[in-house]
Image (cartoon, rainbow, N blue to C red; front, top):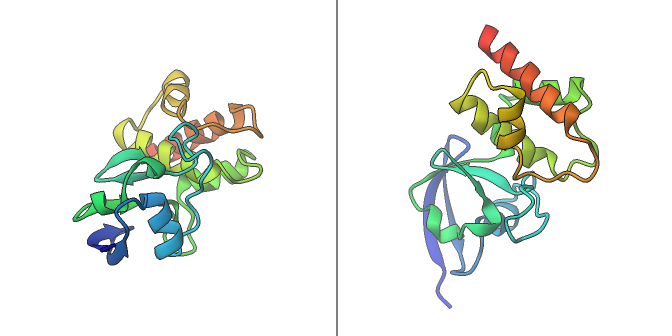
Length: 158
């Protein structure tokens, strides 16, 4: 079976990889590119643990084929921090204890960043709506919502 040669921009850097026709972007990220921050929770697009952005659009990487990202810009959790400096969302998740086991956290952070890029001053209801596609079994979501709202405030002041 022939592999697809794909070129894309990953977390701001050019990347090339080979993938099978049926390989998902999630599989490519984890197995071919060794970026294990994006998690597999359900493999059906229901939990949001594998959330990334492709071309600025929030997607479940388990539902996107690796070959489909040719020429596109992909952002994963690994590209969120700037060196050792955490993104304000990551910092607020720590400060608000908005994470527990860590399976959902990368997807939550990517979804929250996607929201704040579109709406820098969201309401609590908007945060909850935007994160509705990300499931967490460990928290009650309140700390996550509080962390996103706190990060939004800090980001607006910066």
